[in-house]
Amino acid sequence: MSDALATRSTVSEIRAEVQLIQQILEGIMKKDVHYGTIPGTPKPTLYKPGSEKILRTFHIGVDPSENVQDLSTDDEIRYRVFARAFNQGTGDTLGVGVGECSSNEEKYKWRRPVCDEEFDETPENRKRLVWKRGQKPYQLKQVRTNPADVANTILKMAKKRAQIDMTLTVTAASDVFEQDLEDLPEEIREEVVRDKGNGKPPMQPPQEKKGMKDPDGPASDAQIKAISAMWGKLGLEDNLKYSYCTEAAGMENVIESTKELTKGAASKVIDRLNRDIETKKAQEG
Image (cartoon, rainbow, N blue to C red; front, side, top):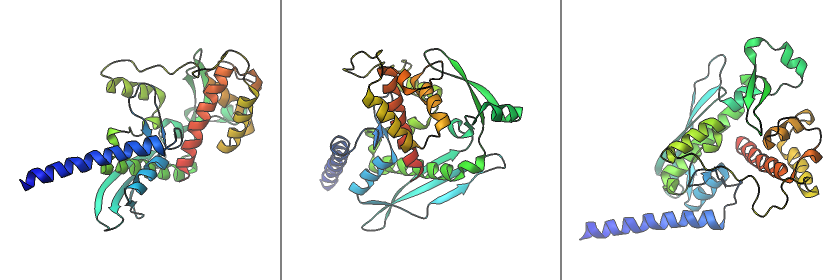
């Protein structure tokens, strides 16, 4: 009898915890700040600010003296971090999350050259031409990043991934959220999405915002002002702004002014800027 009651109590508590996480998602969290959505996945992806909201709700602390393993080599920065969760009232350990990050990941390993001269002067084994997707596939010049330049970013990203893994594990929030899909290169992400969908191709992102009128018309003044303001938040250098917009919008030829963007293209740029600003915030802790 007591065992049956205990089981019912446990089930009730678990149900209440899941409902509380759903309430946090719907009532407190903001899309593209605390979580994001990946086309083709049924669940949103949890960001670091979102994990902090959940941990605070459940009075869960993160051990500030995380176990950090330095797996770096001469040409790679790599960290593995173990984040311990504890009850803030009792200090009891509730679980451990694991996260890892490497400077050999695509987005850290390569960068755009400052100019064509830098690309030309870079040794052959430290530069490349890479194909990118757009309205038509196009090639982009890239050079290797100095691993030491991103060492702090790699460590913070490993800590972020460990914290999110711990949050999902300890609070059973995996019922509601995915983890780390936004960190994957687009091609690999699509494979993961396809696997999760039992072989079904991923849903294609909408080509225009719902309710957007005349997506092929010129970008609005509000869109152009928003892009300019978000450039500053992201800290983009002047010589990279227009190539960034071109890539984000999926255009073939590099634009020379945001006035060349259509409303639909500007919307894609703003969405990309929002994601990259959120990533930057997470990296800066």
